Image (cartoon, rainbow, N blue to C red; front, top):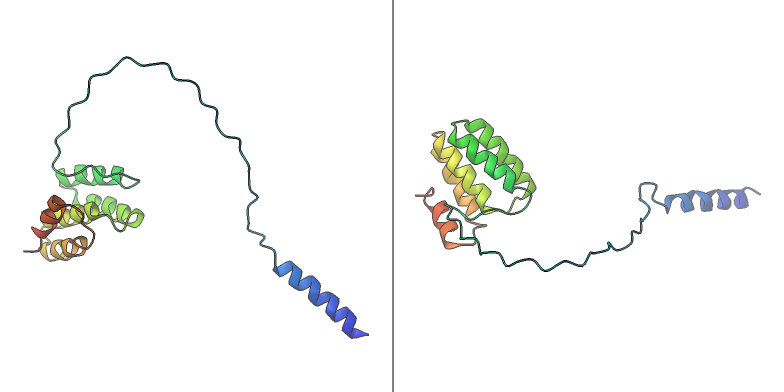
Length: 138
């Protein structure tokens, strides 16, 4: 007599475990409509902008720019805060490691600058970027 009640209870319990109460429903949205573009007059090509380092892309780019500005003003703690936040967003970005090394060096902490630059060498992709990081490891 207890066995069928136990089986039914177990089936109900297990079926409830199979659903995910945290899953969100899928929302189907139609494809956006595109307007036909009118031909634009030919624009003159923009001259290339010379910079000291390649421009970063992605979510961390704004934080890198803020960190550079803070470092130039001598606000090293603020610059490090921006760079550490950028590093949490993009931990494999050598530009962030370069910014950290530059900031540590500017603050007079050469040991930390060297350690950070060595770590950044694991992620550098271009000759200039790698050379800039290597300069802090010597």
